[in-house]
Image (tube, rainbow over all chains, first blue to last red; front, side, top):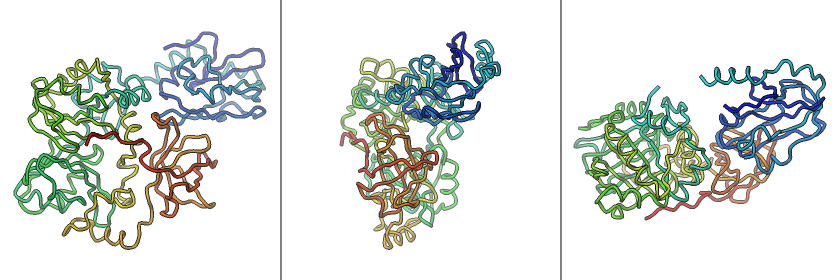
Length: 128
Length: 364
């Protein structure tokens, strides 16, 4: 299934890597497999504020468009411009292809997310 | 949920199965982009057994079909395939289909999977004279082999000289690796290639044989995803998108397949009137200028108001651009006209371009 240890996962198939108050956010391997070839990513701008569960951006594959939700609340401090040019990176290396870095409002929100083991079970259930 | 005779084979090949018009079919095997490019550069094999196949036979079969269809099948020769819309009395499209003419009294009609039941009902409702209609979809299978290497691959399986089958012609009783088939030079990708009809029992054997014999020439199985991107780039219409009960063949740019000179056919009056009064909407190709991916049903604006909607949109793998087909008020369909596509409540600029987006590579 390819799930990385030490990350936090949302039910909408986003991953979060926390470094202090900063949260790197991307979509999981499961998500990219479901979407297929990704051709375009719409990202927010630095300074944009999001509550947990807000739509942070949009991923467009050949087949379909899917919203990306913010797993935690915070303010965008950086967006990954490389993905605008090379959206296929998300297919190739989903856990290196972070979409944004958020300055978290409340790092304790991370506790509402799944760890790798819970997420693995969740994916198996979803896949049925 | 229905399955084609190849369902198990698709699963074994790693096909990602989805529900399409009630059928369980692979949307992709390795990836839509890769499969798409392989068809353009080498060859691809498609299971299109979900299409509806209907035999129309009898003394009055020619008269009957000519009444049902907008195109003229009386001018077709035996062993010719004819593409035609089929309309309602008001001019909207019931379906678009292929008619294979064996002789004046025997035809195979190939229709869209999602419309098979509706078409059969429409046929029966309008039945006239000595005509027999038989749905042979379940006992038959249908493949397409498409791409520049298609003929070379298929030729390996038969002694029949396939170069003799010209564009939109077919040959019956072609033995492919000992399996009895009907082969036509037709397809839905904008490439040269063939469609193959056979009894369901031989489907697995022929599919595996083709993939094996075609390996060297780069033949790969292709799913519904790339089938759609390929036809879309070639601006070939898809029922439910470019065609519907609300859209006439003239609006969809299929005027060539409407023979108003025919004595009578269903929809003739409405279509003749539309042609006389001017076609209000025209299916138009566009290319995105701004970033963003257009999708079906997105609104299209120009001069600050809505002028139509997108029928198919997306990334075109061979062109590496985001493009779309839209049904627009006629005056906005000229090349160079500036449009705005409303993507998630934000306008993104686009410009009208010529169709097809991808120049077809047919062997005529």
